[in-house]
Image 1: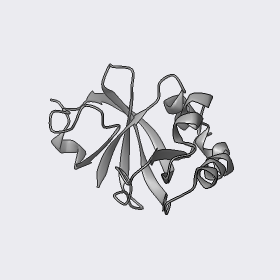
Image 2: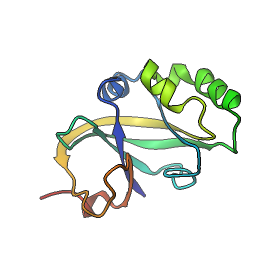
Image 3: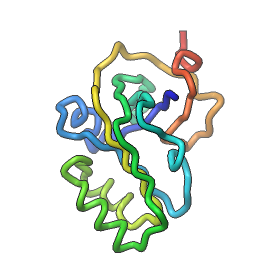
Amino acid sequence: MDNVVYLDYKANELENLKSGQKIMIIRGAMGRKLPYGRVNKSDVLYFIENKGNGLVKGKAIVDNVFNSEKLTKEQSIEIVKQNQDKLLLNKGLEKRFAGKRYLVLITIKDFKEIEPFKIDRSDYGNMDDWLPVENIENVIMK
C-alpha cells in the first residue's frame, strides 16, 4: 500500500528525514483517524511538504508501526517524550500531538530523495495530511 504523507515545512521534517536523524513519523487524534490501523510494515510512504507547491520529494519504507490503545493525556505526553530522539518534533508539533488519546508511531527505513512530482488530490478531502492512495501511479499528475 502506498501512502502520501504531508510533513511540516516549518519544522524541517523533510530535511530531518534526509539527514537520517528523523526516523519516525507521528500522527495523533482524539479518535481513531487515519492512519490509525491502516499502515503496515513494508508499506511505502511518499513525502510532501505542507508549503503549497504540492511536490512529492521523498519516499521510505515502513519498518514498524505502533497504534496506541486509548491513552490518558499523561501517557500520550510520555510516549511522545520517549520517542522524541526519533521524531525530532519542534515545539509546535510536540504540542499538537502530545496529549492526544490515540497515537500512531511509524518507524521508517530506506529514505530516498526522489525526482519531485505532483499528485492529483481530487479524490481526497481538503484537510487530510495522510492519503492512503493504494498505488502511487494512480495519483501522479502527468
